[in-house]
Length: 435
Image (cartoon, rainbow, N blue to C red; front, side, top):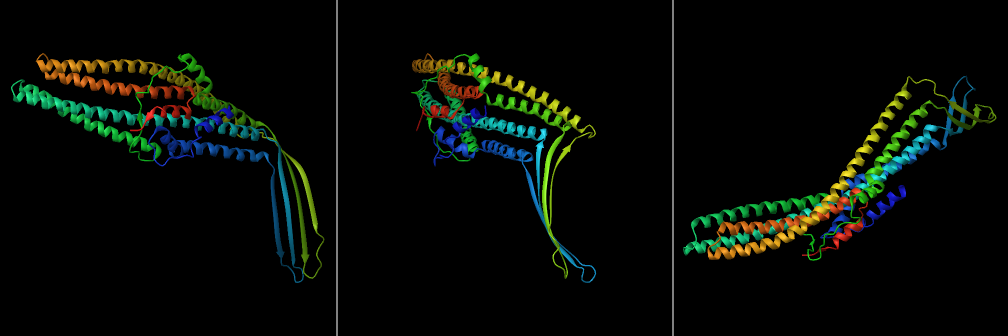
């Protein structure tokens, strides 16, 4: 499992070192986010910290070597001053300490869990970048459609004024057209503000201001049912590949092994101690005393007898945390099931809505032409023309939103199943075009 997670991390971070100077498409923005997004960098730092802690938890099982050296001088009766130099080396090696071995195992599992969390953060980055990118395109399309709608209403307003001037229409028609033009102007201003805010949301991820981005090539865009084409198969993939599930399963294992760690507080530990020391002593006026050499080796057996129920309390706490971890796993599983099913349904709904809105645009264009013709001969009013104009641009906006919703839903589905990779970013990016 650790190899699988690390492989995914490597696949997702393959392009981290390649940062373009000017980000104008989805892939370039994603590559910039890899090296600058605070959430990803936090997850990476947390993972690196836990891997560093493995060595800390291994240290109690390794030998401990210490050395010492000293010098002393004593003054006493005349002619009896003494001085001496001594030094020594001490070695301590754990032979058996069950809690130390369990602690090392826990540190390794915690690092593995951090691997899952980091890989999950990378997948989340893909969906966040994709969503922010297409939020910009959604806002951009909306702003352009609002502008086109305003210009169309403006033409109708001018036409209505001309007809009123020659007595072909009533002043109420002019007022109706003017009111719709004013409303269109206001909504265009709001759409422009939404576009500016969406660019700011993209900057929050990368830390870079993006003035222009590539747009979706609608001529080549095709919304197809994802493979596999049923939610049950996606659920099977999620059960084995979901990074959130992996992290929670490891968390449950950690909680269970923590019980073992605290139970080890009742168990004895055995260590070996060895030492060597050497010293030289000299008296004033005398020759040096013979050097002394001392060596020792021994075993130390520590047996915990009673610690005021401290160990029992820790075991009880660990058992409760195991129950908590088990419920977190169940909660995560239920959420993953919900996310997979919801996003699969969202993909299917987006496909159907795209087809419906495509037809709606065609129908709205025909209806507008017919209404304009009727207005020219007096069988339709300007209100009818304005309504059909609004219907046309509403259909265009909704078609645009449905396309972007489809892309976002596919990415969210793959993330929920744990199969989302940079290849998906590349595939989407290939469907974009420059302005």
